[in-house]
Length: 341
Ligand code: NAD
Ligand code: UDP
Ligand code: UDP
Image (cartoon, rainbow, N blue to C red; front, top):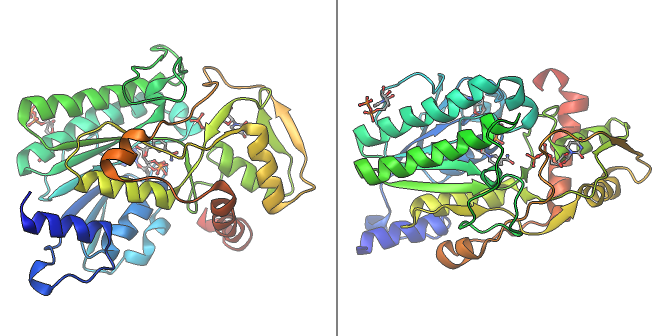
């Protein structure tokens, strides 16, 4: 890498550091698909803050304009209502491709649309990347590992996925999206990056999207029992959204294709998670057991050795520290701004 590239990289890793004027990198034009969603909107905040221009493409299926409203009117920011299943012509330097519903409740509700988004949407964004020579980052998922036989999961594990189950639109969809990404890289020389994201939580999550952290937090705030599915012994590992955004940007700016696991390796059973939520919000909260959903993976925990070694990235925010940051946002939206849900 040349000197200027190294300086650019330093600036990305440490945006506060003031480089000599002549060495500051020129701003990028960055496309964020799904940028009005939970993760996307936090990513947009970071990119705008560091001086880049951002175009958000979103069809508002699970995202909300209010997630990015603080950027409306900023000349660095543009919001386009568009469905990525349809082609589009734009000129950009980088594409963060996030568009896709992430909550099982949402994607099971519209399975065919979900798989079209994953396959045709990803194809269109790769076609765009090829035409304009942009670098493309796919947000894939830990679900590509299915109900895993390897624990914790490394990137070399090929997964154990049901191709005909109710989750397949999402996990097989993302597996196909990874395949397309690698085929555009090998066949058309598109510069690509693949992140496999593990369960992430934080402010701006959809309140009623059925995911476990948002459910427990909303239930505890509304003084309802916390619904634990099955026996509650299944495990997940929860990553705070700012850690994920750091990882995505570091991966995009790195020289590595991936795939990289981006997640927090601290593993919790759903009962343990319920207890942390009780401690933070309401120690009197009750737990109610409900029947579990089909194909629910028993355990999931990332091995992040690869990201630590090659990207020098690891999550910093523990569940005990991150949960209160999300609770304030949920409290405000549930009690003070119910129409803004
Ligand atoms: P989200 O549902 O909040 O955001 C997805 C965004 O994509 C929404 O704004 C939605 O309106 C938009 N979208 C959906 N279909 C679209 C389409 N056809 N055209 C245009 N826009 C469309 O979800 P999120 O949690 O922010 O997830 C973002 C990405 O990260 C997704 O690709 C998801 O698969 C991946 N991911 C998230 C998690 C997690 O725990 N949050 C875990 C693994 C992977
Ligand atoms: N595409 C797009 N914007 C672009 C370039 C391509 O939406 O700027 C779409 C295009 O319509 C096609 C897909 O991306 O459906 C794949 O494009 P590619 O050029 O790789 O394939 P082809 O058009 O030759 O099938
Ligand atoms: N879950 C739960 N109570 C809820 C919602 C989910 O116990 O109210 C469980 C669910 O069965 C799964 C885990 O929490 O084992 C994580 O579910 P989520 O939908 O958040 O994400 P997944 O990792 O399954 O995509």
